[in-house]
Image (cartoon, rainbow, N blue to C red):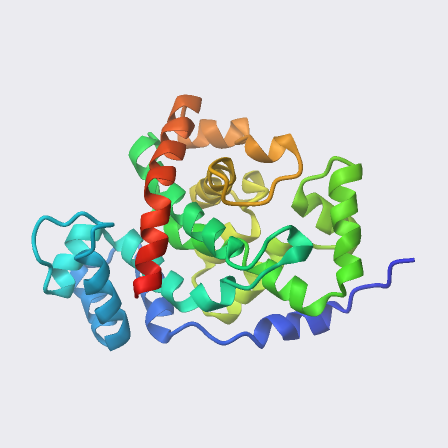
Amino acid sequence: MIEPIDQAALVRAANALDPLPASVARLATLVTRKAWSLKEAEEVISLDQALVARLLRLANSAAVGSSRHIATIEDALMRMGIGVVLSMATGSSVQRLTKTGLPQYGLSEGDLWRHSVASALAAEAASGVCQTTVPPESFAAALLHDVGKLVFVQFLAPGLLGYVGKAREQCNLEIAEAETEILGFHHGELGGLIAQHWKLPKRLVNAIIHHHTPEQGEDVVCDVVCLANVVAKRVGAGYVTQPQELKVPRDTLERLELSRQGVETMCVRVQSRLDGVLAQYQAA
């Protein structure tokens, strides 16, 4: 018989994770506002010298393909765009955390980080193929969408997560469905708690919670993250047990005004950039 989950203890474990740098939370909050200025973003970034160094290094890297030397925060923001900068800042902060192996989810050391970066690149690629506007915070939300798995693995007994794996394989369930069936809630919901602990804005929290159920999130960012998760898996950056995990929900395609050919274009773009961007993070 499966023992009931101590949800209060699980929440405490989520809240025990190291906080994100204040600059990341402030930048994320700024981006989700209806009106913000480049000057405001520059001011937030300038208060974090480590972030400034990483930003300028990336802006001048081959991965970005800059044709001229970028020497200021303003030039880097103009070159890369605020969504990419927010994703980079977030990724630099969680890189060490997400490189942990999660064998209970079929993920070896570094696999979750690779999937996270691939998802962020997919969200970025979506902005070039979707007819619907892709909000810039989608990139960071895509990068963080699986963070709840980290606490599940740290807190729950391996045998318990083994039941989740069996439910996926034997009952033909997707991961969030299997977790809900066995544990009572899923990694997206736990990830939402972590995002709240990190003081990220509600829109990012909502997208992390609903990346498997975008129709419930009622926001385009949820659809973008759902799409990005599938694209990352389709390029080999993720663990797949069921064929449906490689399919983008039809409703998501319709809400994003994206064709299936557009999804294939995204896969090609992510595949071509993934190793270069991972190497750039390594250098940073």
